[in-house]
Image (tube, rainbow, N blue to C red; front, top):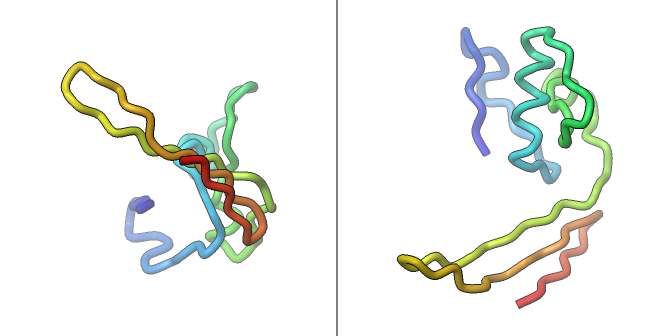
Length: 88
């Protein structure tokens, strides 16, 4: 995942822990000092970009094969603390 901040802030900064697309919304709200609405999933990565740590959590990853007018099952993976469970 790549997030580009204004004025090249955090340029070349890399997060080695697992993150998710649901983290983008809270991260951008946190960056612009906007209160994150209740019920929003994901975490702000801003603290980590400033040198903090990302809390350990389970990440769900899924891949579906899309053909015109057909949604074929793909793979689902749960990733947590160095382990990955894949359902094929």
